[in-house]
Amino acid sequence: MTRSFASTISFRHRTPTSQPRHGLTGFHAATFAVATLICFIALACFQSRVARAAEHPNIVIMLADDQGWGDLSVHGNTNLSTPNIDSLATDGVLFDRFYVCPVCAPTRAEFLTGRYYARTGVRGVSTGQERINPDEVTIADIFKQAGYATGAFGKWHNGSQFPYHPNSRGFQEYYGFTSGHWGHYFDPMLEHNNEITRGKGYITDDLTTHALEFMESNHKQGKPFFCYLPYNTPHSPMQVPDEYFDKVANRPLKMHNRNPKQEDMPHLRAALAMCENIDWNVGRVLKKLDELSIAEDTIVIYFSDNGPNGWRWNGGMKGRKGSIDEGGVRVPMLMRWPGHIVKGKTIKPIAGAVDLLPTLTELASVSYSPQKPLDGRSLVPLLRDNETQWSDRMLISYQPPRGGKGKPPEPRVSIRNQRFRMDASGKLYDITADPGQDTDVSDQHPDVVREMKRTADQYVQELGDLVKPDERPFPVGEAPITLLPARDGVEHGSVQRSARAPNCSYFTHWVGDPEDAITWDIEVSETATFDVEIFYACSTDDVGAEFQLDFGDAKLTGKVTQAHDPPAYGAESDRTPNRGSESYVKDFKPMNVGKITLAKGRGLLKLSAIEVPGDEVMEVRLLRLSKQK
Image (cartoon, rainbow, N blue to C red; front, side):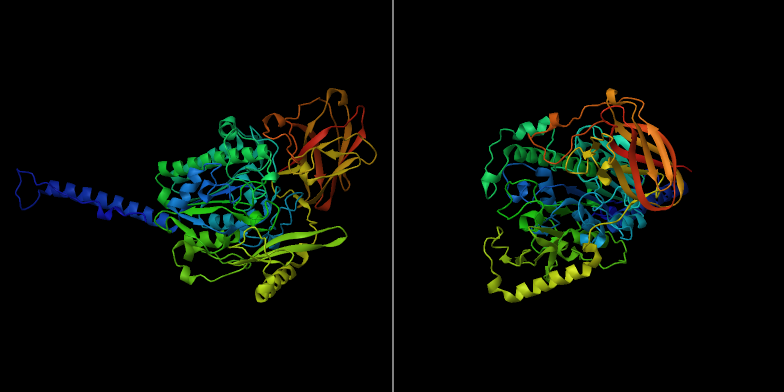
């Protein structure tokens, strides 16, 4: 607990030898009285600040991307070293069994809302399926309302256009990228408060630097801060600076997946190096808190968004990222608040990302009346060593409907309590004794199976229409600038994406066939005129193509008048020979097309060709629509 100075300050007056011992002269008495008053005022101000800090502490949440439970040395993995993250367990608590979602965007939604992600409108990880419904209240909304400075620095992955954008979800400051994947991690294209910018250096280091500046600036202004650092590593592409990769390139690895033949060694070593880079950046955060003398006034949380993105040591658990089995959803979770929560304890009761909103609001004494029912519960009794007040519970792991092999699409649900996990097929496992889910014990515990199946069926029934495909349009005009990336568009005819994963892709092979087009399903909030820019690339031989942008009766024609033919890059920084579905990147150039007036309402914003003198019209990364005042 933060110590008051009241017990450490004493006031001593040395009686001058020239003065009577029984008292002070009027002048000295007045001087002493003023000095004493100043000291007591300073003391009162300090104690007031300490009281405010204890009541409304700063909060820092660091979220790794695709880091499995086994990717920390504190969990026994000798293949890597993560001393800074591990220190949170020494100085705070480590959650033994902390659960999130099998993929990225859903976990972020659960943390932000305290509700299971499928209730919030999130259905997937791209093409708009990652968006949290505007009527959901986020943890940033709550802390901003309570007077906190709120900032997010990293991979948002819960919506790109307002009102889904982080600046519209309670975060006053945002720096990073709103998509789910990014194609290059060195000096990448990013955005700062909805304006496109260029990152500096390795992305994890850069995001941390901006977070540190945010923390220091608001501390100096005397304002508590809520700082969210959602990293995007060790997610692919597997890129990391030499100083980290060189340390693990030839390191003997003693810990392996339960099926070592599945391991991809270049990918595995790159992931270890990326985790060690994250650890270095966590150290930077902790050091900054020490430098600002606010470590005792700050709650620090570290966790990950899903299981490992490759086969590597993970405590013998079944599954990895993408799976609702134990290895896909059990992740690291560490937390510290010196003097306010227990220290050096491993918390055994199960918990999850849905619990963080009610936990942090209670710890920070932030009043909050949920507009919608929360699925999470406050972990404060566990953090203050009152487990006698804790009862067993069930946590739900869910994946949207998916068909195949002639089967109709149906949701997949896994339920777990403190001891058992029921998988999506209805098999039951004693997960504490059988993390690999090798022995089905459903016949031995029929009552548990019935209860868990009833819980799963009720949950799916409650979701109702939210289980159906996402048909929400992309809003235009809710903010001065609307960005419509290729990720949110649809290709037609011969047009292709640069890679299978939409997130960081661009449109290419637009050859001008009659059916060729690129469309965005948009909804214009109010009739307005917009300046249109296209971030494009075009070879010298293809200059001169004419195109049209239309929405309803509105049409805008344009012509590619300048070549801009940058090379695709990213492969030179990859640590693996195959980056999978991630797109390589290019430095696209904005081309001003002109003004178009879009009428209020929903429809297709369509980009099509008029004249194609060369082989292609152009490549398209995104549209930027700037609303005229």
